[in-house]
Length: 120
Image 1 (cartoon, one colour):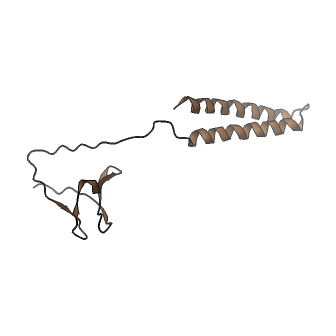
Image 2 (cartoon, helix red, strand yellow):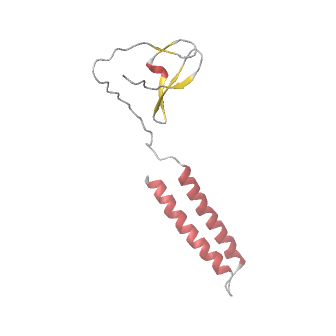
Image 3 (cartoon, rainbow, N blue to C red):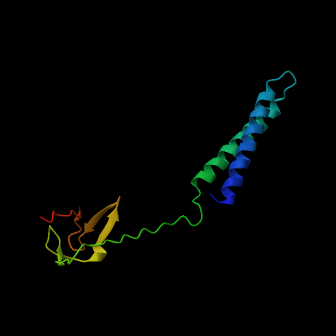
């Protein structure tokens, strides 16, 4: 969490606290209707700050996931072909979606998950 978000949350807590106090003081014997307006505006600004801070993405939160596959022993590499149209697929067509390798055919736009066949 960066400093701007922390300052926004602290400011929001202070504004909401004093806003509630102003609203509560409106209903005291010496209360004035202007205090209700000041309290409501303060509470609204406080919740607006919370909403703004929660939606603002933190700086530098980009994540790069690198997947390294260690293949055991000698591996014979066959060409990867699309199950639908038979087009030749390359490594650029393979992406990682929710932790599973997914292939998208550039020719017929078919998308399917790669599964590993048993080795026996």
